[in-house]
Amino acid sequence: MSELIEDARQLPRRTTPTWEVELLISGVAVFAMLQLPGWLDDRMFALAPRLGDEWLSVLRLSYFYAKSAAVVLAATFALHLLLRAQWIALVGTHSVYPLGIRLDRLKMGPIQRAIEEARPDSTMEAIERADNRASIVFAIGVSVALIIASVCIGFCGTLLVATLATRMLGWQVDPLVTMCVVFGLFMVPFALATWLDHQFGARLRAGSPARRLIAGLLRLYTRIGMGRRNNRIVAILGSNGGERRMMAVVVGVMLAAIIGVVVADLLARDGSRFGSYAQLPDSDMLALHPAHYDDQRDPGRDAPLPYVQSAIITGPYLQLVVPYRPNRDEAAMRIACATRTQGLAGEALAAARLACLQDLHPVTLDGKPLKDLRYDIASDPRSDRPALLAMIDVRDLPRGRHELHVGRPSRAGRKPDQGTPDPGYDAIAFWR
Image (cartoon, rainbow, N blue to C red; front, side, top):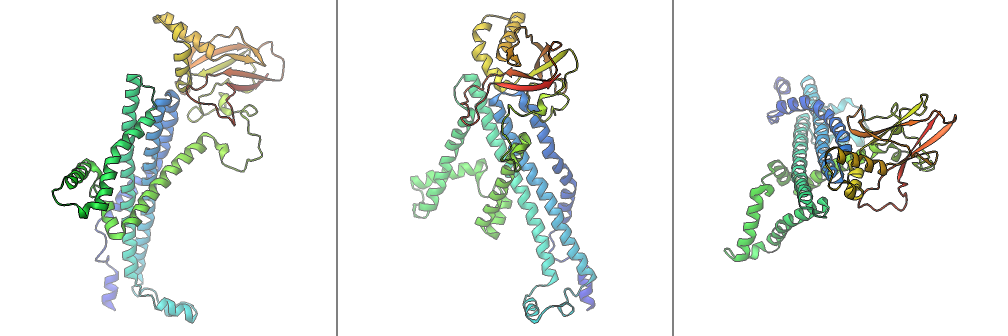
């Protein structure tokens, strides 16, 4: 009995030797990882309105992969701390009660007692399973995050190069399509060599040209990081715990993280997508968006829409701010302003571009065009992004509701949605 009590007061001999380091890393890093997704959200919302569609694709892809890796690490460290806490609780409980579970003191029927007594399970075995479970969760989470980070570097790097190439060479090709084609061409030889090795490798003669070709391809891909030993943690877990099961876990965690990040991004951009609002009228023209009013909008999260100072205008002038949106204005100006700005430079070029922007963003008040509208170049004071500013005299407007329509250019190369066509303007209601 004394030996049993003495053994219970010590850690099991097969305890994972890295448990202290695992706890240290998880305890220190979990708080940083929990804050990292929010930091990435802020950077994404701050940069997105400054970029056109091509560069926005690079930013979005980088954001989705980076946030997915951060979410995986945050979940891994939090779950690992919980599992390590369970393990510590088991070790502590075993040291206090070294005799383990005393079934004779538990109230059970004869059938359940027979089932429990037939299970050859000791507290030491439960402690060892909890220890191993925590270490495996830590290893899987870190490995999946590293895989996502590697994919992010590969995909986003290729997309960045493809975007630069299409812009510099003037190709009329979608950079995202170019990236997919490049990756397809890169992966086809590896997939083909792997399939041929599985199907015919055992039947190919040593030294034959086909065997040398397959071996050369597989050796090349192994050297650039696609060998089975390159991710040693996943290889060890897969070879000992079942390859299919391990790959299902790795792929499942990756997909869950990426899909979760994409869905969260959609909900952050349009919260009305979530909830039982099937019968609520779905019309942008009937809705009052907080982003259209400076005293209600969130410049860090709202889309860069035209806005006025408030829904209720008490002063003599309506201050209309139209943010410059590269994904719409840049492409439209290349098409509409090319002839007007040809051969101009300096102040003349700037004035011609401002006049072109004014034509792209006409304004109507209660259905009547504002012919004396004048835009000035300004900036959003709360986001420091370029914008157009117009001061509209509303002293003669009668009391009540009024509506401002601010024209916007359509996105180049995009077909309008047949279900919800783009009206071509932003509607801002206000009251005098």
